[in-house]
Length: 358
Image (cartoon, rainbow, N blue to C red; front, side, top):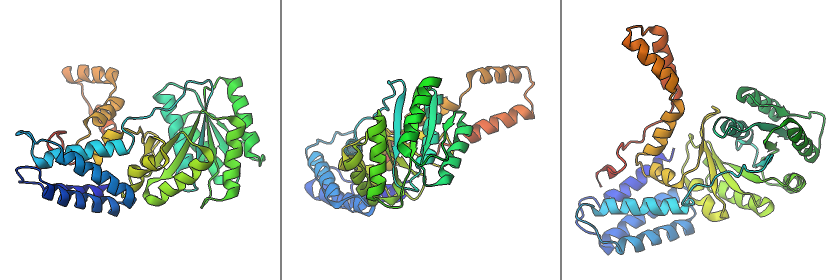
């Protein structure tokens, strides 16, 4: 993801390679290339200009230490400003209420139903919650079937009323069911459309008003670039959602949506999703994403992923078998399966402070 943007930014930083000090001329040249890279990544030109103007102002105001080259300093400034543009700090999901009602909204094809399943998996396994999935998409029969399959994979119940054509009553009935059966999270998957229309907006707004959700998450396909930002603005005007979810970050993502959606709607990005597997949902950390875009190592995420896959009890048993010389092919097979499950792709630069030599 973001490969093209990363390459373009690297090219911009190389303009400062070998420079002994920061000057107005070499900063202006670098900033111009950064702005071009952002616009090419489908970042709104006005936002790109404001972003690079801030970088230029900070770069010219910095004193370069003997241990830090101008290129290294520029990378740090860009990383800090990029993280700030995307929200600065992570925003956690509010799951304090019992039950907490989470409303999922977005266009058809954005990955709402898949995300609903992933969120249930995340809350069940990471937060030790007891979720209930709700099929409130009354127009697409496959959505109910898909959610039912996902619920089975997660190991949580799903509330489906196939004959009911009123999304509001389905949501209300599901919340009543959750209260009676001890479910402390209710995830409502609403209908999407191929484009924004009044009927769609009215229906999801009616569901919102009826159930008064604690969280409203807008799911957006990050591959749609600046169109995703415009769609988010339209939804936010109607729903005043609490957070954004970026899906399909494993695709050919240019980066425009991830970089500017927070700035445009003034709502935090709460989750990012990659692939179809249930465990491929991550809390959104602006600084880590900025590091990723700049090709810097994301050691924190690497360690967290490793910890998720690490089974201490199994490791102790394996150590005893190896010491007793009883390690067999079945043990080897289990180790390979654990490695395969850990699908984290290392960034090109393995040292957070190596800066690729700039």
